[in-house]
Amino acid sequence: MYTKHKFPLFLLMLLVGILPACSQPQKFVAPEIGPPADLIPDYVPGGVTLGGGYQLSGKDIFRAISGGEDVPQFARMNDFNLKSPKGNDIQGVYYQGKDHLILISKSYYPEGTLELWRTAYEASSPKPCECECVKLRLNTIPFPPRIAEFQEERTIDGRRVAILKGPLGWITVFVRGDYLLTVESGISLEENLKIVASLLED
Image (cartoon, rainbow, N blue to C red; front, side, top):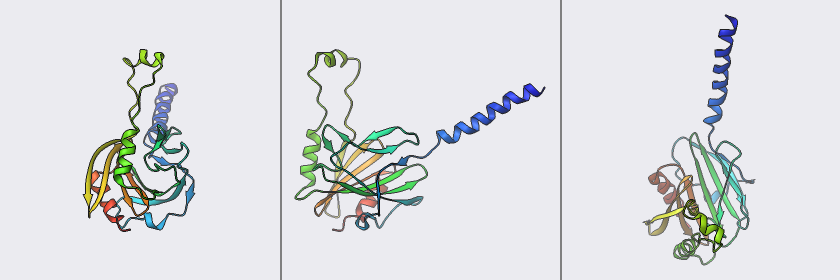
């Protein structure tokens, strides 16, 4: 009788231990700095809190997001960084919610425009290798897509904003003064654009 109860109790304890591990929220992993004041939006949706500031090198591939486990995602592909096309350092702030993150970043982009950024980004689309070994495998394994796909462009308060869909959700990109700014989040596009609108002042 003791053995009959012991095994189900062990399974229950194992299940209780596994479930929290499966439901861990996303974590943001990056070198921390004080939150840049010019990246704190006037609007943030309810249920998120400011996690802190961060700074990353625009010249290196870096680990930014972990899905609750030590599994990195990378922000640079094909020598083009969506958040730092000139290779300048990226500064940002992140907000942590129960189910999602909000990342707001800037990089120095002197004399840059959204049109220049978009032209360069679209030109960075992955191109198949000329190797024979790759050609043999193209029919079975599709070439990996870009990290974020352009969806549309909108105008907010006279400012053009590019909208992309990425692995974390919506990414909005715009130029403010000499800086390229991005807002990346798993929230709705409408909420994302409200954050953008609150950051548009130079």
